[in-house]
Amino acid sequence: MARRDWVDDHIRRYQESDGADGHIWAGRDGGQSLPCLLLTTTGHQSGEETTTALIYGARGSDYVVVASTGGAPDNPTWYRNLVANPGVSVQVLGDKFKATARTATEEERQSLWAMMADIFPTYNDYHETAKATREIPVVVLERA
Image (cartoon, helix red, strand yellow):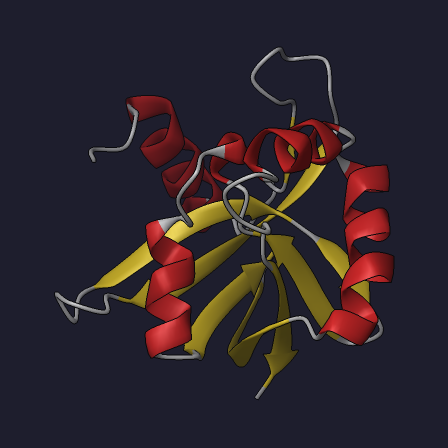
């Protein structure tokens, strides 16, 4: 599935400005203030690197993202990639680093979900949409 031009533009502006343009995303409606990081995964089939902009939260030195795909019934490609190859690259503003990605454990998932839903309440709507077909993964990015 091809990405929309605005997504590629967002990623390009973020990379070119070290996050000065793109770290805070106004959302599709333009009325929000959502922190974004860039996650680069290695394709589970292609072996090619792909970068995705994702809303994030922080827990200590770890970063947290949600594999929501807007509540779609399938997990996003980036999530399938990191399950197959958990070694990822992350950019938060100008900080670029290697990380290990892992799906949150059951014990930590509830509190991490609540943290992410505080940042982006729409996740709760997505969770309800996808609830019958999948549990939306919460991913912890641990600096390598």
